[in-house]
Image (spheres, one colour):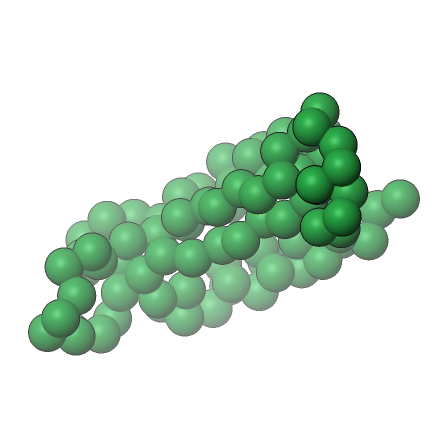
Length: 88
């Protein structure tokens, strides 16, 4: 995976998706997250992941807030990501 990314320059090597800023923690050192921003709608995230897959992106990381704030969202996005990774 990484080797292909280094050899070929016709596709993105890495994409990072920040899917939510919402967090149910109150870490004193953190100023990145908040309690009011909604997560990216699952449909939008699926479109973005599909586009990254079409571009041949080698690595996609997901982060942001506390994904545990929405267990349904977390399960759905994880299942979809696994399905995309198993293509081809």
